[in-house]
Every structure is written in C-alpha cells, then in structure tokens.
Length: 292
Image (cartoon, rainbow, N blue to C red; front, top):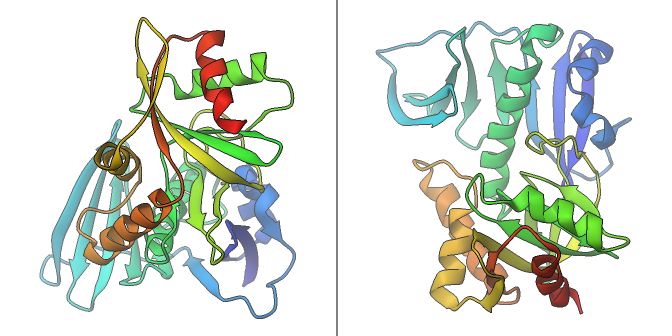
C-alpha cells in the first residue's frame, strides 16, 4: 500500500492507496498541498483508507444528522462502538464512510483509483477534515478571500450575495491583490495571537487552490444594496456574522463549542464590518480602506 501525504493549513492528511499516482490524478486540486514524505515531529490529523465494505447496521446505529447540499443528501449515524457512519446520496448512488469519534481515521467504500469517485472522495475528505480541525479551533469559513501584500480580507455572505464578484472587482481595480480562496478557506488563531487564513484544496466553482496563507485584517459581511455603505459591527452582530459563516456539524457538541470559542477569541482582535454594496468600484474602495 502506498501513501499520499498532504499538508493543508499546517495539518497532515494521509491517503493509503494501492496507487499514489492514480489517486493523485483524481485530486488535482490537492497537488499544491502534496508532500514527498511525512515531516518529522508532526502528527497526522486524518488518515483515509478506501475499498472498505461499508454497510448500514440498523441495530447498531442511530441517525444524528441530515443535511441537504444542493441535490446531495448527507446523513450521519452514530454507532454503538462510538464510530460515525456518514452517508452521501446524490440521486445516482449512495456511498458511505466510517470514522472514529475524533474524526481521525476514515474507512470508506470508495475505490481510490476510480475516476468516477473523484468528486465523492473530495467531499469525504472535506467533511472529515472540517470536523477534525474544528476540535483544534480551526474555522472552515464560507468566504471569498482577497489578499494584498500578505494582508487579507474575508468577504462573508449567503450564497448569491456577491462575495466572488467583490473579489473579482478587487482584482480589476486594486493592483497587486490576489485571490487566496473563493469559497472555503481555513482560519486559525496562532499562539502569538495572529489570525491567519489559509488556502485550501476546496474553493467552490473557482479553481483557486493555493498553499499559502495571509494575515487576517477584517471580515466583511456583504449585503446587496442600491448604495455603498461600510459600518463596523457591534459585538452581537459580529458574533452572529462570523459564527453563521463557519461550517460545522450540528450534532457535534464538542466541535461546535470549539468553533464558538475560536470565533470569540478571533473577534477579540479582528473586526467585522457590514457592507451594503453595489457591484462597482466605489464598494471596492470602501473595503480597500480597511487595509490602510
């Protein structure tokens, strides 16, 4: 069995596969995060094994969460051995993985060398990585991230608000800025109090997979409006804005508490702004002022 080793936001993910070359070909978005070998003195966050026979067991498991993601339905079951079985149904097929209660060791029914399994493998790793890192105080945020000279703004908002559009307008009007991630960046507070945002192998419909990080300066929650107006949020609005933008499993009390704690710590030093905006240069100039 061969290994594929990736480092995402400084956390190690290892895939055990009969062919590292074939599995890597299924995950081109992971290529910038690949390592040749395991770093010394660094623990592994998540390990993944494929080709495991995963079957429902109605006598040993109970449903703890159901969510819908476009046409995909996710169901999570808790087994009496304190493992979870996560099931993904997209109308064409139903696939599952089993993982321990800490979300560290995944065994899935996917053949890790089959091209038809690429999208499922991506989603499985995304879900497990998010749950495992939540317990470490990491935040997987629904945001578009624009970076300028190592400083970053995270644009928040519900789907369709214009987060990606605002980032594209930044690239049009602000020389030197770059897109770090367009949908699912990773945020964490460092031991010295610095808040970093990392690129990730997941970026929605925009292929932006950068193995880089920037220092977070502010979060900006976008709202479509006929006028442009930037207002700093008070404590409650800031908390609601950021917490609602973080992905998490509703049944995982430990993970949710860690997410809440991380959000509270970050808001002690990073502001959140409310931006009413049109899709124009004036709106970009308002948010550009936050980096001055």
